[in-house]
Image 1 (cartoon, rainbow, N blue to C red):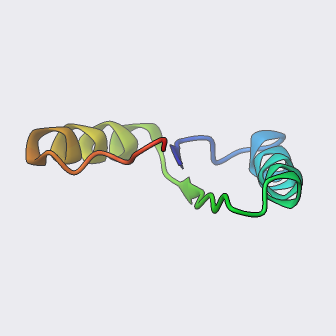
Image 2: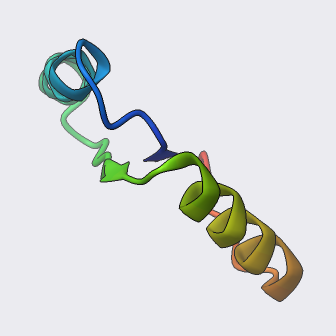
Length: 57
């Protein structure tokens, strides 16, 4: 899961939400990536163009 929230409260809340979700769903592994907005947009443009988008399955 890519995200571009690098400030509070998101910086603290998202990892807590992921930890709780993964505990309730042991077969799920979520990777958070902190990025500034412009870096996030550039990365999503690149992965979309390359056909290597993250999956949700």
